[in-house]
Length: 184
Image (cartoon, rainbow, N blue to C red; front, top):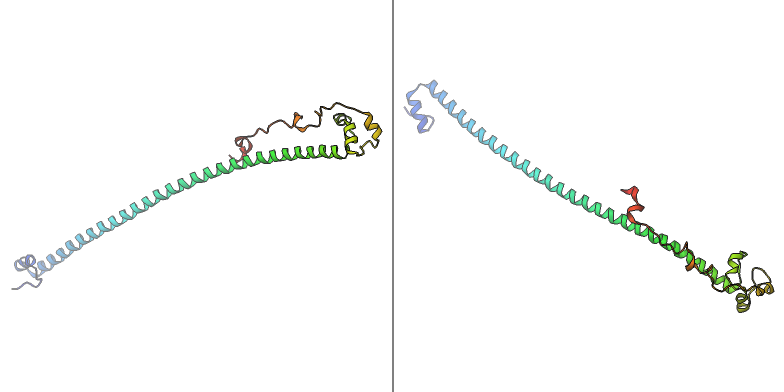
């Protein structure tokens, strides 16, 4: 009798056994092949899943590193911003102080050019009214050039020199650390 399966190993089994055993052997052989194929397929699937998981974990690590670098860059930029803001505040305060000094000096120059507009005796005592009236031929706030020319006062001008005023000669003391504590 010839073998219907066409395999040499299967044909020796088929010749020695009956049709039921032959059928059972064929079914068992197919089960083994299917089981081996399924195991290989499962192994390949696990390997693909593991590779995918490894790739995702590497991507997560890379993104975490990039986030860390971005956060560090943001913190450095924020600190630079706060430092610049503090410096700008100091410069604004100094500009205000210098503007005030300039205004005071302009008032003094205007007072020297066109008479005194000050009724204040302390301020008037710092200016030699004789010089103002005689040099500029202007009328004083007193309205009386005879009265003004009769007063001769010290010429040191210490009250009118803004550089000699103690409250204007104080430096502005401020640092970036103390000016913007609420931002930290």
